[in-house]
Length: 236
Length: 236
Image (cartoon, rainbow over all chains, first blue to last red; front, side, top):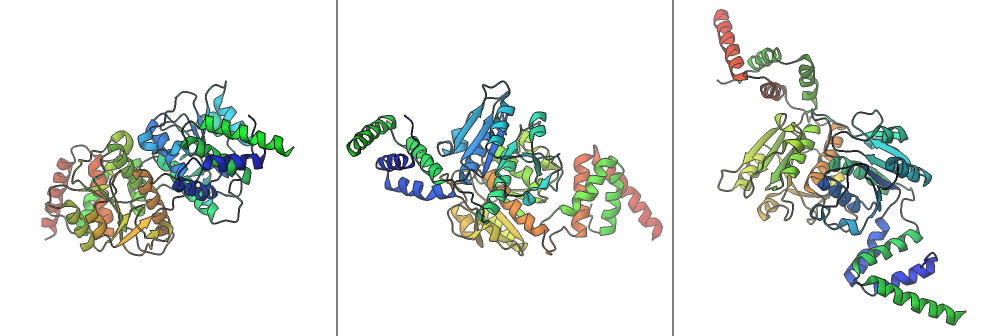
């Protein structure tokens, strides 16, 4: 089943929306306009489940649609108590089967036009509030103890640090990610940059949301497809 | 031993500084200028140790000198793995023996001139970035599941919310606290408000830091006091 025609997708979305509550449909209609791929997150080998889950939860709240998870050493499992159901609204892309997961993930993002920005309390770089928001940006976060791998640091286009005034060397990873997302998206939403999803992406995302909500959704999509193709044949 | 004379305190601090490394003394000399009591935090019945500890760690990094912990139902224990040693640099005030801990804590803060600001995703109030920073401010955070108690909400002077764009109802408590501290202190440091500790508070805090660092410090303070009073008697 290849769904690449926007009208086809819109009809599928409208069809699926018949199977969800009015309240949820209203949410799907409004929340979609706040989603963005202008900023995305990459988590490299986060090993504490509650940290990664807290990052996911914040990303969802800030309207960040994609989170990339590199698993060289650690398998990442979402703790639902911490993530609070956020994983059904965000696209999680895992990198774990490749010879070099870090390289694969970052190369793919660069191909998609992302500037790669590594967060590190040590590397000199932009202060968070001064990081330019114009380029599409992927923010990289490393493990709790050692930070990002040398390779990730080498592949980064820019660096960013959060101002720190105390004795403690670094923020908790979920705090660090949230502060970066907050500062970046707040400036983004106040700007004239076109940071929203495209019409095509909006419909695809709403379909994904509907799929995460509706029981026996495969059967329902099959029903729709049969009707749609019958309809097409009548028109042709 | 009553130490209320500034010169006496300065001499004690200088004496104690002989017993710590140059590196640490340099840190004590510089970090003190970033500490503030203009903003303080109140945590009401946080029950997940790693959350409270992550809040403490962030507070320390943002230079917030006092954290108030109300324990009506939950005993709060700092997880050192999460707090990363931050508790030795911050004053932790616990409220747990009173008939009404919430009332006791908030009343004391009001007596000290603090505006009480409750954080809640539900209550209508200031958007975080628009919360006025001029008044001395105590930010209240409630439990992970139920938020602040009705009493805390009733006693609040103002409310603040963090803008949220997703489906998930609330941020993790440690994230929420960090975002509030980041936004508030960043504006505070850029302002002309006198947010730093007083000279007296600076010396007292440095003495507390030294006490947290030096072994057998009571003996050393006793030594100093004996010498100091002998010195005084010679002068008189």
